[in-house]
Image (tube, rainbow, N blue to C red; front, side, top):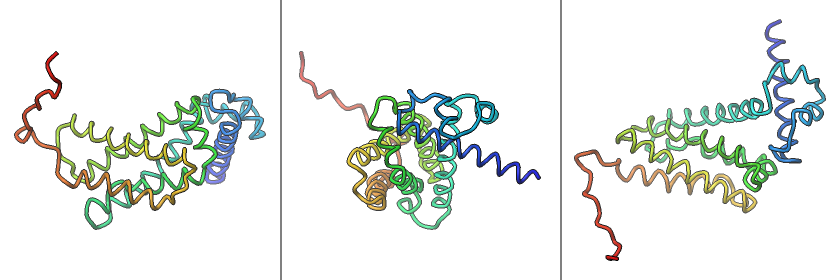
Amino acid sequence: MKRATDRRVQRTRQLLQDALIAMMIEKGYEATTVQDIIDRANVGRATFYAHFADKEALLASRIEDLRAMLTQQQQQALETRGGVRERGLGFSLAMLEHARSHLPLYAMIVGQPSGAFVVQRIHRTIADLVALDLKGLGFKGTAEQRALATEYVAGAFMAVLTWWLDHGAKLPPQEVDVIVRRLVMQGLAAGELPSDEEKAPPRKSQRGSV
């Protein structure tokens, strides 16, 4: 009985998530209301609030499902044999394929101001995954250095993702994945961030005197 109930809950959550996505494509996230969502899903208001507090919680559930899928792909990559290039950024291809399979949604997200909130949530998810990658790959350095590297890699990935979607995702996801992983992982594999003893002295300013 519990299993049947769980399946019903999952179906209802999926129905509401799909309705939210459809409305986001149609109207944008900010303009979409709970009423829009329940009308599209053809469920009652009480059903909606039995599962989610508001549309923000509904969106968060969708992003958490995405995070879970990407994390699974990442863990599989980290557990495989091979060097840094083979094991790092294991979430990359899955993220690219997911974005391409939902191209109208992602085109809206990256192409409209109302999608900025969603982009920020996805960026944070990618940054969290990158942080796990750096830890799993034994990346050395201080906490601040690792945080800097995390934001750099996550920012680079999001920039490529946005550019790719803005251009209609014409390059195959596999090709984009290979290029991104090669560029990023070569940088990480070229050498660990310097320790305190290895830090170079500050560079002199290149600006002329005023």
